[in-house]
Amino acid sequence: MAVITIDKVSRWFGNVVAVNDVTMSIGPGITGLLGPNGAGKSTLIHMMSGFLAPSSGTVALDGTRIWRNQEVYRQIGLVPEKESMYDYLTGWEFVLANAELHGLADPGAAAERAIALVEMEYAQDRHTGTYSKGMKQRVKMASALVHDPAVLLLDEPFNGMDPRQRLHLMELLRRFGADGRTVLFSSHILEEVEQLARHIEVVVAGRHAASGDFREIRRLMTDRPHRYLVRSNDDRRLAAALIADGSTSGIEFDAAAESIGGSAAGALRIQAIDFQGFTTLLPRVARAAGIRLYTVSPADESLESVFSYLVSS
Amino acid sequence: MNTTVARLTARGLFGRRRVLILLAVPVLLLGIALFARGSDLDRLDLAHSVLGTLALGTLVPITGLVVGTGVIATEIEDGSIVYLLAKPLPRWQIVTTKLAVAIGSTWLLSAVPIYAAGLILYGAGDDVALGYTVGALAAGAAYSALFLLLGVVTRHAVIAGLAYALIWESLIGNYVEGARTLSVQQWGLSVAEAVAADGAVLAPVGLATALWLLVIVAVGATAYASVKLAGITLGGEE
Image 1 (cartoon, rainbow over the protein chains, first blue to last red):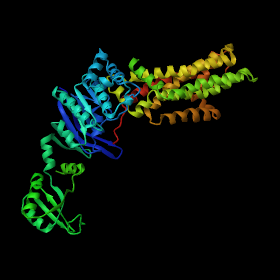
Image 2 (cartoon, each protein chain N blue to C red; image 1 turned 90 degrees about the vertical axis):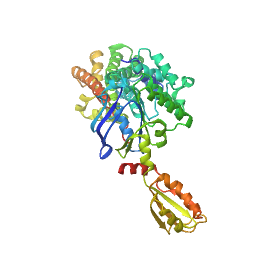
Image 3 (cartoon, rainbow over the protein chains, first blue to last red; image 1 turned 30 degrees about the horizontal axis):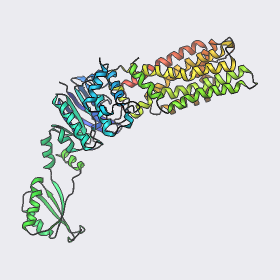
Image 4 (cartoon, rainbow over the protein chains, first blue to last red; image 1 turned 60 degrees about the vertical axis):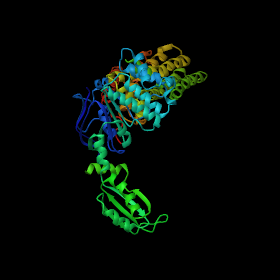
């Protein structure tokens, strides 16, 4: 059983704090490291893979410090985000070289097995420089798996992949997770993480914002107050009907909002508490009152605002 | 030595367009030697200018620079070194293997053509050709180690290396006598003096000093490069 423990870890670059006092532990199964771009995900993965020293705190694999300890790579397979990978080698030569560098007893057999695992046999004799992004990702996977590691670290593995390649990689990772390996991948896309990881660690602005089961975090994210901009043919009557229901916590009539389409000038800015409740309530209320809705648009659906809500809660 | 690291390094070095620059050096040297042979200048003076000033003074450091940084700086720059480093390999082994490839390539691309150019210009007499060749072997090894270290410690290895070779060795070394004591080129010249017949080649730095400094620089640079590689930081800044 391989467990990575991150204990009170901070990392700063000059005056910029990239990771701020993070403590987490990553065990067998699939863990998703979720956060917006620049949140410190890569910095964390770099520290977990031994290519960056924590400014304070410790990062360890099964109690052994990772920084400056090349022996940990017997257990760790790393899929870096960067694409450069000796593009003058063929896929086969690249994976074979990785097997040899691990000092495996039968590097040829290991390379063959790893390439079969990612289904890249058909392109193994082509130079990796000619590969598409998804193909490169798979060959990088093969190189990381060639020594059958207990831990697999992947930095934004789904970036630039088409939907089919994405599904294939997810399937592969699921299998590793089911085998009892420790799989950690980073992503800034909630849906991606949700589809794959049971366990999620959320980082925002270098801080550990949430940790736990994905359903729990999903609920935290959907239950936050949502803001909507609504235009209708009778904003004031709609506001009156909506405020009577418990799923809204505030309605503001903005007479200055410009008119769009057939609506009169003005719009409602609505704060909903219960996301599910409000989305079903609004059309029902409007219909019962004979009000026509022109615009219903979420005002703060950006991932950053979702994350910053998580941090403040 | 790790044969896989050596193979990857050699392919990276010779598999790119850089090889054209590297091959231009011996071609240029042999071309000049053939051309100069036809002139009626003093043969020994010619040999000193071509083998000493041009070859040992300029071509060996440039080859050492391109090769020494090429075996490691390129990989660090594009990030592909991560595939070597994410392995249970001792870091000194990666460094010494890459250094061996660099030294072998520098010798092949500079010392061997120097010997050939020496034979064309002056023949085997007075061991002048042999002297400059052995000098180039010694200097080539030290340059390789030094520039490999630069490739590990700075992202501007080529600039730093050029500054050392051109400004310190060639420019300052020409005017300030003391600067010559700390110049790989001069140490190579001392070795050349020792190998060639008495008085055929003259060097300002004593042989013992030169040999000690060559060994200290080569071994020190290699050891320091291994330490730095073990603690290298990749990426990180987001």
